[in-house]
Length: 313
Image 1 (cartoon, rainbow, N blue to C red):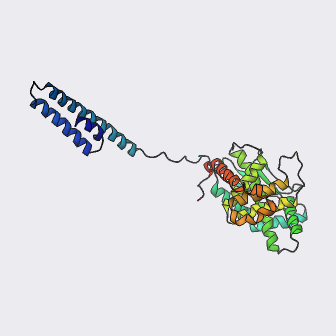
Image 2: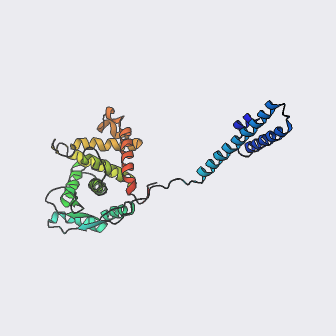
Image 3: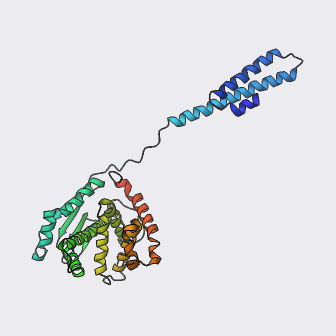
C-alpha cells in the first residue's frame, strides 16, 4: 500500500485520503506486530514513510497548480505613450491658372482631409506631419524628414489627370475622377510610407522606395472598401510612364512597379484580380504572388501594430 500511495497519492482528495489511510495503517501495524516479527515492523515503517512522502509531494503539486492558476496572463504590450502629433493639411495658393481646378477641387471636396482624419484616428504619431499641396515646377511628390512634410505637387495631379485622359479619352468624367483620385491616394500613401519609416524608425531592409510601395498597398487596401482600386489606379498611372525611369534611380522601373502592385493585389484578393494575371503577371510570377503578399502582410503587421491606436478588425 505504501508503494501504491506514491503512484496515486498525487490525485487530489482521493489520493490524499489514500495516503492518510496508508500512514494510519502503518502506525497501527507498528503497535500490533510483536517484536519477534521484526520484518513486519520494518514494513509498517516503510508504509508510513511512503505515505508521508506521497502526501507531501501531492501537496506540493497541488499548490503549484493553484499558484499557476492564480497567475494572470501577461497583458498585451501597451501602445507607445507618445501620441503628440497629428497629420495636418496646408494648401498653398497657386500661381499657374492651369492648376486652379486641382486646388479648388481638393479644397472644396476635402478629399485629403478625409484621408488625414482617418490617419489621425488610426495612428500614434510622435510629431506633427504636414501634408502640403503646392506648385513645385515639376510633377512630383516627396517626403522631407527635416521639416516632416509630405509635399503633393499640383503638377503631379495635373500629370495624372492628363495620363488617364490619354489612356481613356472616351471615358465618363466620373471614371476619370475615380482613377485620378485613386492614383493620387496611392502616391500619397507611398510618401506616407517614407514618413512612417522615418518617424517610427522602422527597421526595413532593401530599397526604401520598394518598401514604400508595399506600405501604400498594405495601408490603402485595409483602410477603405475601394482601397485596392486606389492601388490599381497607381499601377495604371505607372503603366503610362513605362520606360521613364533610369536604371540607376532609387525607384524600381515603372514596369516593375506595375507588375509588383498587381502581383500583391492578386496575392491579397486572388478572386478579384485573377483576370489581370495572364496579361500583366506571367504564370511563373503569379504562382508566387500569394506567398509574396503573405510575407508583406506579416512584415507590415509586425512593424506597424505597435503604432496603431487600435488594431484593425
